[in-house]
Length: 248
Image (cartoon, rainbow, N blue to C red; front, side, top):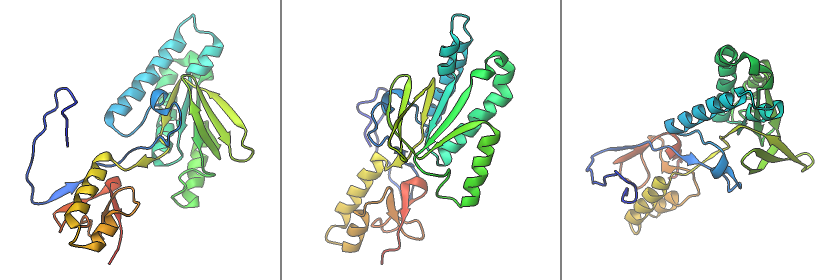
């Protein structure tokens, strides 16, 4: 790990007997144009703070007497991309903020607020049971959250989310004031470095370990006991940083 290029960072070595590896994953923008420049991620505490500040800023700008109704519609249009657990939670929490707090602070702006969730899949929380998906859909309807299913975002500009509908491939444009990207994750860069280090350590020692570590997984490969393959039991990995495989 190197912090040489970051001001105030200190690099040092730390010996260990057992390492618990839980660095998680990082947001995957799928090389979609404009995501890094204009959308907010939601993986770290700092991300949540930035989103909160942006939302408050949108409400304050919409409150100005010089803001036109059309501008208020755009400023108070909140878009969440991704129908997985993170995207669903962000959209639901935003709706709760509107119902519990914004209604007291900005009652004159309630008619302008719109929350939309864009999901490339056909149902929310697709990795869960259909009952869970249906329940989340019903909750969203009760909270007046618009769900745009079967839509793939193709570009995000400074004020528009552009998407294609899978049904007819037509481009749909959505004006927004704040966009949160929660469409997926990818392997952490540190995990890639750890994989390569373990591969080198196991070259000529265990072909099985090398093959397992080279498998196209999102996290470091662990066994059923969460021990990292090729670490001789000295490293354990959990969460999004790990992928369980039962190679023998």
